[in-house]
Image (cartoon, rainbow, N blue to C red; front, side):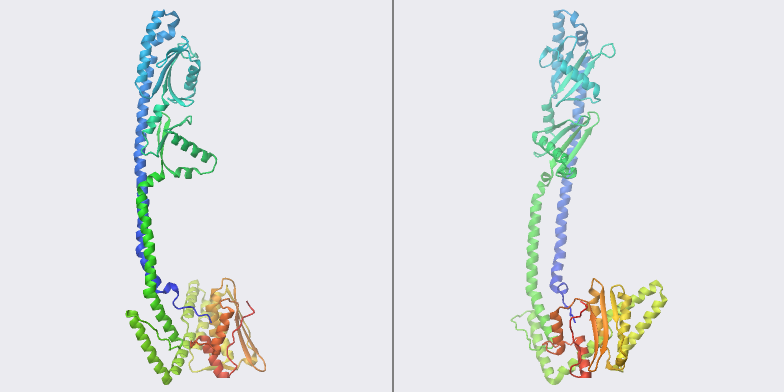
Amino acid sequence: MLKLPVNSLRHTIFIRLVATYLLVILPLIIMGIYLYNWSHRYASHEISKNTQAQITTYLDDLNREIEWLEFQQYDISQDDELNKMALTWEMMSNVERKTSLNYLLPRLVSIKNSSAYIKDVFVHIPSMDKTISAMTALTPFDAVRYKEMNRARERSDSRLLQIDDTFHLAAAKYGTAKGTDPVFIVQIELDVHKLRESLMQINLYEESGAILVSENSGFTMASHEEAERLMNGVLQEISNARLPVEEAVNKYLIDKAYSDKLGLSVYTYLPIEVVKRPLNKFRTWAWLFAGTTLLAIIFYGASTYKMVHKPLLLLVQSFRKMEDGLFNIQISHKKKDEFGYLYDRFNQMLIKLQNLIDQDFKQKLMMQRSELKQLQSQINPHFLYNSFFILSSLAKTGDVEQIELFTKMLGEYFRFITRNNEDDVPLVEEARHSRLYTEIQKMRFSRRIQVDFGELPTSMEQIHVPRLIIQPIIENAYEHSLEKMQEEGLLRVAFHKDQHEAVITIEDNGTGLTDDDIQALNQRIAGHSKSAEVTGLMNIHKRIALTYGHGSGLVLSRSPLL
């Protein structure tokens, strides 16, 4: 019979004390983790909020600047002197030409100096075969740039024209004839360097950066080289499918603002590590707290084990040995605390028990324990609870026939085990009671456990045997072997008689016992064990041996069903 330990580790006071300590400490650790994450989210939100406001203001300012430049561009395109030069240049005298140029050049210079974003202002006049610039004055007509400006205006609805890596504003003046090229084009080239510098002003941190993106053309401009490398690297990672977009973006805190009027977006990025940097000190203290807590748990656990659990375990082990009938196990100690007092009381109790044993109390004690074991085997609360559960399940299904059959079997079962007026019964009644027990168990385990209950030979029916020698063994097989099996279980009961002996064989295909366990049980049943424990199997063995003499009783061996 397999005996499970009464005080498994999870039931010990030591584990409960450590668990209680953990229940006190864990909420503090969880709260610290929550505060760290909340601080990170709050800091990210505030940085994003401030950055969003800053880049929105930046786009608004840039739009106002562009509107001012467009106004200046429109104003110069309507200038009478410029129109006169474009239309009558060939008819003008040298003095008139010089006068007009002297008038126009200061105006172009004035427009250029009116904004830091202007790199140069050009007027391309095909009729003059000249290009007038605020920086270079009068130069040969730049036909290439004239055509680029004209094509860019025609194919783009954007106010800002993007050519190569530069931004431009262009205004054209047409003549009266339809379908002809512009009489002249006023071109304002924006200073890319100044735009980069303005993007730099957005950066709140040294590690942050800003990127200006034209939504129509896809043109991008980074605030500095590091931002440009980062932008190209992320795009390369995404295009090569080496990194998902979410993972690439999640490395940074990204904010964006878009201007419908300009068709431009501004992206800012900030590495997450920079956001977490102010929290590094908090994280260091959190790890320090976690490490200290772990050391405290180890110290508390070791101290509790040494000062409480180990002395208590010694006392429990001594009580177990005493329960097994060993009384020469006094605890040697030098303690003066509460455990020392308990050890002294225990030693004195052993002395008194030994005196009682010397007065022939041992026999009375064994009889009482045997009776107690027999009563426990007669009415098993576990079996009783399961029976009521089965009865409740049948009642819920409304299966009246099964309820009637089950209650009848249950009544016969308890009537047999509560009969106190008979110690011996015919084997046919014992077998009928045992078969009835298996039928009751079938109601519960019909799908997992098969029962092969053999027929009792007629020659064995009237053999008188001690009551309850078969059913407790079957119950033991269910409880300690068959119930725990994952695969299909099998229980077999067989009867055989020859000239010398009658044999009752009870087998199952459970694997709960090793060969060493079986050998130890045989030694215990045979009385060769030092343990004085009286188990159900020993109770059955002794009753059979007392009834039929030496050579009868229980024999345990490995079943061929395995």
